[in-house]
Image (tube, rainbow, N blue to C red; front, top):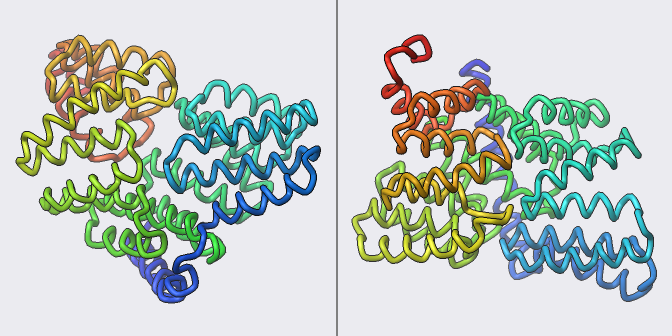
Amino acid sequence: MTKTLATCIKATLLTVILAWSLWSAVVFAQKPSPAEQAVTAAQKVVTANRENSDGYNQLALAFTRRARETADTEYYDKAEEAVARSLELAPGNFEGQKTRAWLLLGKHEFRQALELARSLNKQMPDDLLVHGLLTDANTELGNYKEAEESCQRMLDLRPGNIPAFTRASYLREIFGDIDGAIELMVKAYERTPPLEVEDRAWILTHLGHLELVAGRTESAEPVLQEALKLFPNYHYALGVLAKVRSAQKKHNEAADLLKQRYAAAPHPENLFTLAEELEHAGRRAESASAFTEFEAGALRESAGWDNANRELVFYYANHARKPAEALKIAQIEIARRKDVHTLDAYAWALHVSNRDREALEYVNRALEVGIKDPEILARAGVIRSKAPATDSAAK
């Protein structure tokens, strides 16, 4: 993409954001969120007819939306109960199975989600959202060719649809086309109804992230601020804005934002980021306490799919200085999936264990995908600099 086109995209985005920001601040003040409204509506459907499986499918989807809004995993448990009731009333019903696959993705059980999505795809080859499920599961597992094919199928089935644009944007990012990813996410934003404030805030947050990956902190900040105006205290936006502050060397401000995020979404991976930022800010006692709490929480969930294992690898490698523990956790994850982020973590665990020849193999596999994440590139540079002399060609 040319520089002029990238500039036009950003100008268009800011124009669209400003056009809606004042209006949305007035309309949505003190009103239930979109997911809360969806839950209430679905509960009314269920109450009116407790033998109708469709009502329970609607309720399950509403609970998954609420889980994303709040980062509260209890909503996934509620959604699971609703799906179970739907499948009890109508065994094998297609919409219930799709919702179950969506739940598996939300709980990070990617292999099971992929198996179910493949089965559903055989039943209904042209179902748009089943191709979305296939795209998501394959992306998380590192099957990027298959993910790209499913995403393209979504665009072929219904050109211009929002779910395909957001997925295509993420794949573009993974493949290193940051401006292309921004272009697609802008299109998704323009097509998202104004009433869907959380969806719009999520898109704005991802746009802020993409601007930050491109090194444009001055462009990232206003987009993230608008996301927080649209959906106050939004945990995703707080996390990315904290990265902006950290890049600006405002580490105390970054740490305070991450404290807000952890209060809203108290998961171990969020505590790890907070502990690192407290360390950067020179708040050693707070950082040490946060790291200790993080390690305990991350270890408790390390055997499950929804875990903080990648963060645990970097904690053991860079902070606790326990390379054997870092490698042990990395081996668990690399056996489960081989996306670029897991390849990166595994390569780093090998590096701190003085196994740089093996580390080079895995970091090269990550870079071959095209990823331009600055942290991954920095670690790759260190590993390549330590590669044995016989690997000079790879260097």
